[in-house]
Amino acid sequence: MKQLPKRARGFTLLEIVIVLIILGTIMAFVAPKIFGNLEKANQARAKANILQLEGQLELLKLEAGRYPTSQEGLAALLSKPGGMEKWNGPYVKDPALLKDPWGNDYRYAQPGTNKAFDIISLGADGKEGGEGENKDVTN
Image (tube, rainbow, N blue to C red):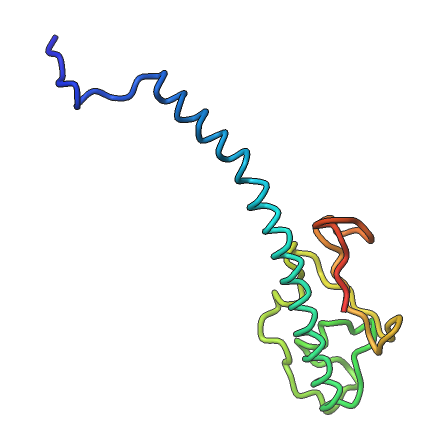
């Protein structure tokens, strides 16, 4: 059997295991930072989406004379609800904007608790309350 030159040989099992251990150690320190920032980014994106939806609802009210009811919901930004003759939409081009960063629908209530309407994201868990990425985001 012909022996290959030293440079042409592959890695030994020990070398591969050592590299995997080093990569695992690095990921143990880096992963929490990455996922912590992802959590903050999703919260910020939810807040930005809510602000954008607020603006579109204000525009709808200016044109149509009223906000959508709770039953009509945010879908009124996409398609004309009954009884809204001056609707001039769609006010949202991308239906994905009506879902929060975790894929859940935003909750819309009109009238709101302290405002004309409330828009709420229930966070990653889709349940009321919570902390961290499960924290609710409201307008």
